[in-house]
Length: 300
Image (cartoon, rainbow, N blue to C red; front, side, top):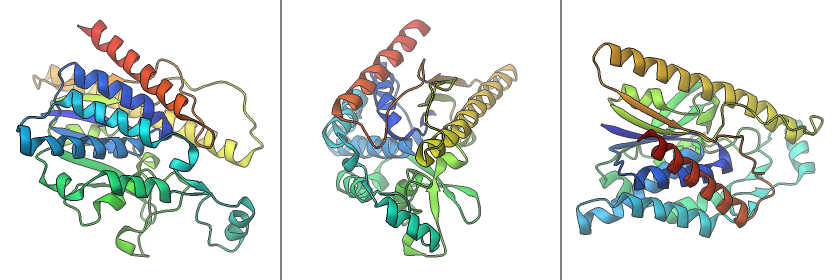
């Protein structure tokens, strides 16, 4: 069983899109796709694109699927308002005082885009296994959802709901539930794929091993919050990859053949959620493809 694992990383997911193109052009054909945060958006779109081909062709053209994902990003994610609408900071502060804070950003544009672009029926009819992860912030538990879940698309939205910046998602409108970004607990869900029986895993992480050491305004609430998040995510993804590499090595020594390939940026990626344009997205996609292609070529 071959698994494509797509980690979190907000708009750094554009880099991930480029790497995915390199992976799928190399001949890798996944049986299962796992996603967290922006990886949940990319994985859901990939499976939806693949499902479109099956009735006519009975075979998935994976390079064509990945090109569809690139086109999706290039056409639809060109500026901050394509993702979310900034709320009034004054009102956000007031709402925080009144204990009704609902994030600094309204992700309605992203939610609308995904619902227009993805057919839940197609996902459910696909033979591909798809899982996305979100965190139940009331219990602290990590929850993996599949298209067979009644409110799957809400789990996808929850998985990509950035803590503090975006509101928690109430699954099925149930006010006793509140879900946020799966990256709070797991950034690269390699372990979930291995536990489900994957024997070959291609993982695309959006974070380099080392963090960006460039100075920033740590007295800015938003910049400080982003930095704290980046520190936690960097530690999580490094630990997850180290665990997976150690696990695969031990299993191979026991005679259980497993293969793990991890792709991640050579240097920290820089893309501001509140200030980017289509050129920035294209730049990261091209960078991802070049680095992914280079790693695949060098490994042969």
